[in-house]
Each structure stands twice: as structure tokens, then as C-alpha cells.
Amino acid sequence: MFDSRSVDNHTESAGGVIHGRGLPMNFLNRRESEGLTMVRCEISGRLVFSIAVCLLLRTAFASSSAAASSPAPGAVPVGEKATPNPEPYRRRITLPYLKLLAPGQKQAITFEPRDWRFSYICVVGTWNKQSLLVHNYFQKNIDFFVRYKIAVVGAFSHDTIENLTAWAEQMKPRYLFGLAQTEFVDNLKNPKVPSCWLLSREGQILMKHETPTEEVLGSVYDKLKQWTEF
Image (cartoon, rainbow, N blue to C red; front, top):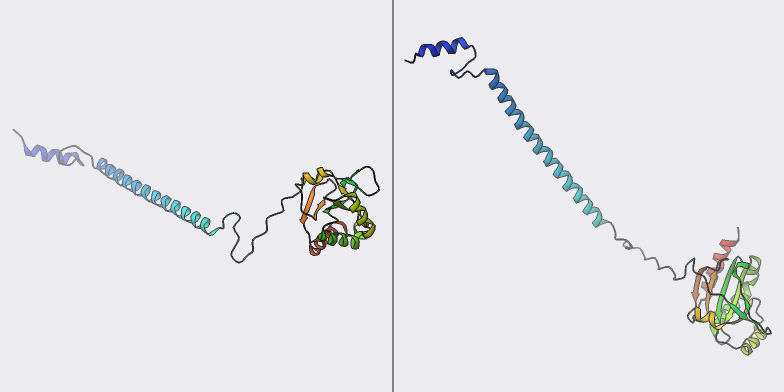
């Protein structure tokens, strides 16, 4: 027979055993503590994940806003004028070799840019009225060019030696001039008359002007003064 008193005695004598199952109180407390720790870790993990997601979203939004507010490459800000595209001729591009046949000469001479600090070569013509403007400009300022060892060359295109001789007797040019050989003009792809090229000592093209006005020629003069007067 089952004696209820033995159960009561067993419970009291255990001093920490409950319900007659033999589970210590400190074991239950430890399991409860571990459960709370797991809950806290889970909450902390979710909180860290949420913060990380918020930071990522904030960074992505800031990047997209900066990209939207920044002008695209080459874009011109509102209220500012666009910078003109550079001329097609830049440094490291050399002018073709130039041979000139002057009146009274039987053989053409080759012009050498290396003998000068700079060279200003202009394709002109006795038949072209605009070329007269170029001639007058160089005649007036030739002393400056000579003083700073800057060559001025008049390369006459689509002309004859007879016309050039008559022109030279009338105009008395103070600079180097002559008929340009056909190959030189062809290599320049038949340039407009007049057209002018400013060359470095190595023959590299620094500037090019087609049908230049007196203002354009004056700007080249000013630039050369900056480069040479020091």
C-alpha cells in the first residue's frame, strides 16, 4: 500500500526537493537565468540588425542625393557660359616641311623652325584682298619679331612667280616670303587664304587662325610678348 506520510517525510527531509520529483531549486533557477539570457541576446541581435539596416539605407540615400545634385561631367553650371572647344591643332602636331621659291631664285629653300624661337607662317596670295591685311600687319610690327627672333613667313599659294615678283616690287615685304610648294599646301588640305600657324622651335603647332582679323593678329602679338619679354 502507498503511504502518504512517507511522501511528506521525503519532501521535508530533502530540504530543497519539491513535488517529490527530486529537482533541486538551484537547477531551476539556472535554467530560468539561461532562458532570460537567450531572450536578451535575441533582442540585442535584432536591435543591431535594425541599426545596421538603417545606416545602410541612410548611406544609400545620401549617395543618391549627392549624385543628383552634382553636375554631370562637362555640364555647364546655370548662369555660366560654356568654354569653347580647343582648336584642333595642339602641341605635338607638327607642320609639314615648307619649301619656298622666292623671286630671282632658281631653287627652293627649306624653312627650318629650329633656327627661331617661334615661327609665324601665313598662307597668303597676291590675288587675295584679306592677305593684304596680314602683310600690312607684319610690315608694321616686323621690328618686334626680328628683335625676339620670331620668324615671319609669307607662303604664297595658288600663285605664279610672275605675279609674286610684281607684288614684291610694289609691297617690298620685310619678311621671308616665296611660293609654297604644292605638297605643303596639299598636306594642309588646301587651307583657307589667308591662314596663319604659330610654331614652336620644334615645329609643333601652338596656334592656328583662318582668315585672321587685325584683332586676332594683335592677340597673337600680345601673347608672344608675354612669352618673350622677361
